[in-house]
Image (cartoon, one colour):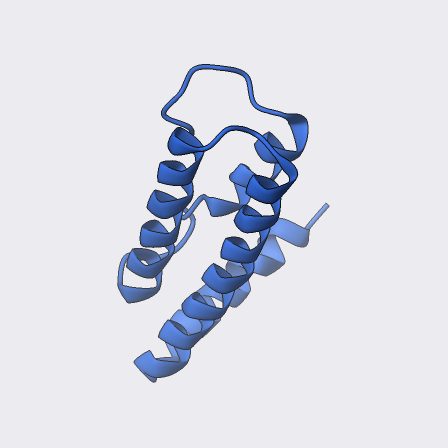
Length: 94
């Protein structure tokens, strides 16, 4: 995800995986998630590893989750919520 090829601190590297959005169906929630991932990528390219970078990424991740839920709720389409629920259940399967 980072623009830099330098190895990242394990805490930084661990949180970046949660910005993936390819599993979301095409549409507004995916676009919202992609914008958050782009911001995370930009910050990773601009800032050195530090506790503050990791905290900022964690807070951005929390915000992204809220934004995506808001996009799903605002869409008023139950099929999106069902699709996302099915994806979440598939992730939990052994």
